[in-house]
Length: 231
Picture 1 (tube, helix red, strand yellow):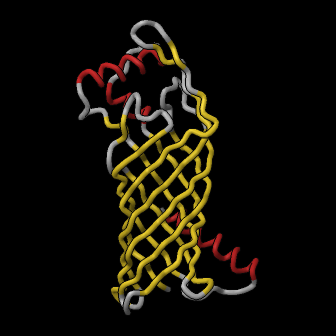
Picture 2 (cartoon, one colour):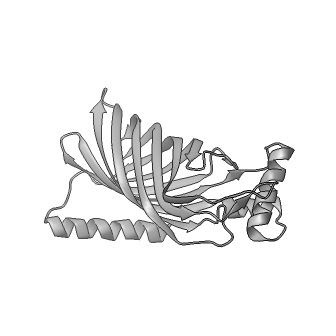
């Protein structure tokens, strides 16, 4: 985590030197997104994703014009498949599919690990803040960035290196606790894209299908919450 803090700090210093000024109202954010729904390009045909997961981030931001702010954030996300609460028939299907893909018998624990998506994102975000009173404000924002998928087998027998883009949209409410600290709660919608190809997937009759996505899409819908530390 300290590495991430220093990385964003040095990027901010470089930004300040490049543009020749020190921004006013610099702040840091520490936050978490509770993702309550996921959708992907496979349409959850073979498995679904668990609610929650790990979605943490650290952000540095500043005010650049009136009520407009821009931010640079580093996000770490782990998305887990939902395998233990599904029906026995669904478990049997996913075990059969993953066994065929990997040519060996796999435990449900191992399959869950292979279907987990671990990724890191660097996102540039712009948002506007609309004060309601001295303490409460409403915010709207959007951002774009790059992602690296650190670990994801999916419906493949080997792990691959995947890079892509992410777009996100935010809306919510912030509350000023004191002149140095805010809390916020809002809605987060995120779209992630990367190139991805599965192995051949066989059904019980021996028929096969292979998916090749130039833009594999993973969408998430979540509750965004965190703290803002104002310098």
